[in-house]
Length: 265
Image (cartoon, rainbow, N blue to C red; front, side, top):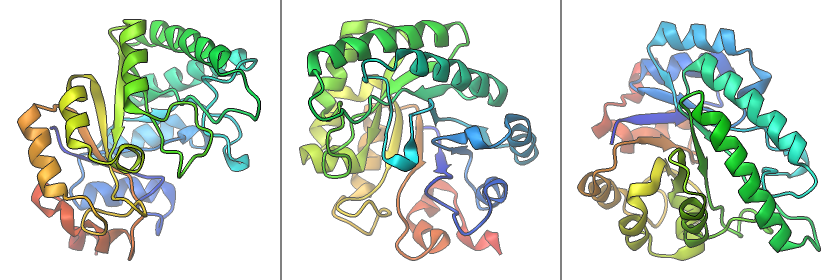
């Protein structure tokens, strides 16, 4: 694997957004990611990234009304234009920031939605996104989310996600593997990593059952990191969790990867 990325929607919430970039760099992260960066100016973000030497490695495409509980629109029939306009905006940001990966979240289905039609919509939207992203050298990713956190989410299982990637046959369509969602939905995740490691573009770290940091939950991350190395995973590992005692205290697990929380002071 490359190194650690800090997800700035989950970590360093003790600081204003732009300062989070600087703190992440100061303590040893090599990259940052942020789910929905569109409230912030890409030019200012790029200036901060260049000043710190950090890479920006992941973002979501615009995903509907987040504050109202929406978590993506790629599989929502009738909102194709909104999704495609969002892809265009995401690619503008990705190009400006040098971001190699955008996540097209499927979304939570409305009550009574025709699942077959939603799947068809999802495939068509993903094909559109991949084709537009390929022209920018950007990868599109999809991610299953567990029903415990997002009831009604269209894409729940890694098997369904794998089938979609293989069905569309786009070279720039890959998977995001989130340890929290995978473990909550499927239990043991090592066999899933064995099966999918060649399709994974981004690996997110969070510990079930409460989505906390490594060491504060049921997964053995020392073992999982060794598995990633054994399998030859070459992407980023993103810290995307809910700290139990503040961000800096939560990062003791990251010391072997060059992160030194005390340097924030």
